[in-house]
Image (tube, rainbow, N blue to C red; front, side):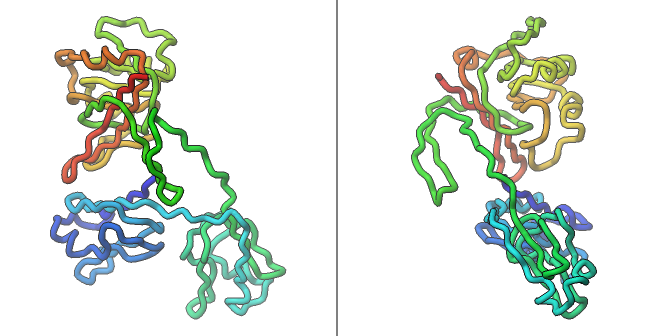
Length: 310
């Protein structure tokens, strides 16, 4: 997933011109760990450094946000790094000079050990420190996590594969735009609940649910029934805040860790709006994909609902 780097950690608010003046990187740049991304008026208190290696995909100057995709070129083979040889110290003293401990995750470019202020050893690899050997003076770094499966969330045809990493899938579906979304991409069978339907049974489990207006009591039931996703026209802001356990951010939503994904079609409201679910009626019982990611203000991106005939 993209690693989001926010310049909002600066000590004072900035306008768009100040953000542009201070940025030291641009879209499509590749950045390294600890690379300086931002500096304004030679004030070190304003400097911002990258915590990851990443490829910059976009920059929102209004919110001062860099969005980058982390570079994950980890080796699964154990690698030994000769700490004591580089620092010219005795192996039995290695722990006294280490900046990391066994079990720490280190990225390429991270400081591993030093004899202050003259000598430093930086990691050429990303992974977990598996061993610190006080007899050889070496440490072992290995990324021992097994790759995870990434399942397709849509029916379609693979049209392109780039560098064995990016897959393009052509789909046949009706796209419905939402106003704002929360949670992760998720797909499932679409089930429609009318405003008069107060009988929620186990048939809701693992379904994508549509309900015109959703209140707090509905949410409690949806959590108990373990639905996958929710489409609604209106929902109160207090109910959303209860689900998120925080106020909504001003720039980006989506990918939150919540019980089920949500896409709102109309607005935040304590009352239902006039219901118009004609299109959704045509796809009742069909596979539906929710993509909740939303970016508001500059460069608006709205959440998507894809309705499949299958």
